Length: 469
Image (cartoon, rainbow, N blue to C red):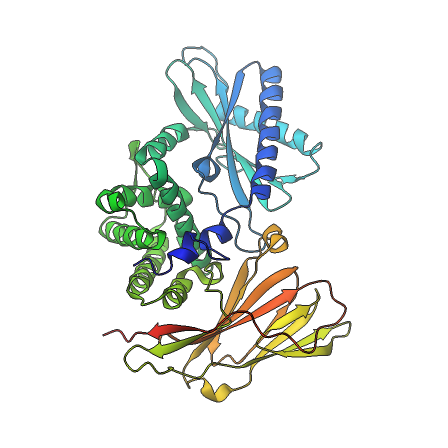
């Protein structure tokens, strides 16, 4: 068990948790800006309208389950609640729309003085105002009335109505659910599930589960695993167990009650959206079960990559040869890949490599071609998966992408970020991996590409090809 634990949260060069967790620099940038905005709103709203104003960080950032945006154009979501305090016994109180107008006006004023703030959305959203910043993140500011005597909160909606909401209570429930190392592991499991959701619903965004829904069902599933947790569980083993419990629960009952308010259903999907979510959840469970049965790390990682796509790191090797576990023979010959490099304007070929690009400049075109197509089975699919890494890719939220096609023998790419990246070519037949060729691509400041690349420093790995009965 725990075949791929090193690649989830271990000592591998790349780990899943490392690829999806914001860097310290990214966290510091976000933290400095939400603090600045919170301080501005407390000061200006309090002096202008005469109420005691407080703010409270909430959402994924508060829970420590925030993940990086995984596609270009996506943003971090940081929630900072703004609280107007007054006693409920007062005769006159502002309306929900008044509170929202006051906060929206101050955010528009703040926009003029903050160079990193790209825009404040106009009109405001139903349940919050939104300020979008550079470096792929935005701050949502839900507005509340807080009665300091009763400690009761009401959310002010743009449509001029109050909505019962208490983010502090559910956060306390989450924090008290488990403790110590278990809490750290639970936070990682929630991040893994968010990563799955981020790459699995591109064609059905309305079926993508919300962050709070995943947080609650994962937490309640993890709490039920206390006997296994006593002995310690690797992250991938724990994830398999949590996925199974979530699957069984949601197929039996679609309602997900707020753990601190039974009257609130956290599952707000429509019936059609729910019908789009359940098959993907079943697919995730099937992947988890197959990964759990895998005989070695390469096999498990390749199975998990079906759900995590380019986010899932693969072992540090340039090739993975799948061998039949009964005969010990290779299932198929490895694909050999030529890479042509085109540079300039207009583009002209400047280099050609086999199975590795040891040095290439930015803004070049790369054409990857399988030069021994006869080894690819007739009905096999070929996956070309780009796995980007490094600071520049992180800043653009461009961690990779994947293309899949029947005998897709060629793929075109463009160099954009300094660092060492991978183009992974995976051959599958009937859903089973037959061979993997990893093509390292090193992008650096060069004027021409080396013509005689050094041999890769990695070694060949063999994975077990297991025929399911």
